[in-house]
Image (cartoon, rainbow, N blue to C red; front, side):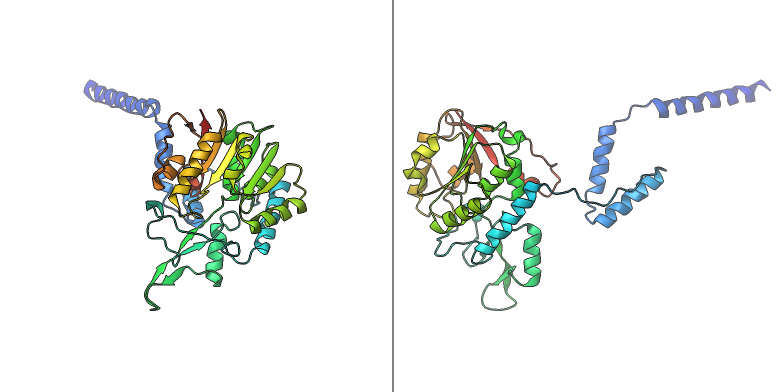
Length: 340
């Protein structure tokens, strides 16, 4: 009678050990979270994602109260910016946002390999979102393909390029997380074009002065009309002219913004070199440069024979969205430097 008792006691102890191991074994919760994200990431449709999350909650016997379906209220500044965007759309000749008689060239470098005037359309990122473009394509207001050889079956996808920064990119740029404290700082936008940087800086930033210099009279007039209509003249100045004849604007600034300053508007590479020599000469220690694309890419693409080392230091920035967010690449395009 003792043998069955020993086996029973042994089995009971083994069960206790297994149960103890299951309750005390260390769990790598962060690893499990990552695995869960990897599992969910391929599910793109919102209804499918909700269905999957409901399944998980049901499996874990978790009851979650429904989240109220409402969008956050837009701020007064966002409403003003949206109205400005619509005013600019109404002021432009067409969707391409090109000024009358404006010369635009396609950069001859690897970043725009295969781009031509025939297969490229200018659609401004400040005015039109990706959703706007999709709607215009569906409604027939904007083409998505072009004919390769006048044969309706031989077509290719058009390329879209923008000469402005998106509102979300600009709001991020003017945040303290990116530029730091800009109170009493002066910002210069070289090639201000539509004025997107200036309006966004006025509404969302802390700079004491925002100056845009633009060589095209059409865009100068457009910007002046906007800042007058929206009573922004107390902090925004628009200068009509060539930056290389206005070195004082560079020297008086704390922050300089440059978005593809010459790449789409000047084919003469010697002028590219002269421009960057000018910028190097007149920038001062402690000044910040914000560029799209990076200085490294601009210098490489345009074969600028000048050294960045000893002139600028690149500043690492925290991008406000995770890497799997579809807008992550937009924020990566903005680069920040300080003058040494």
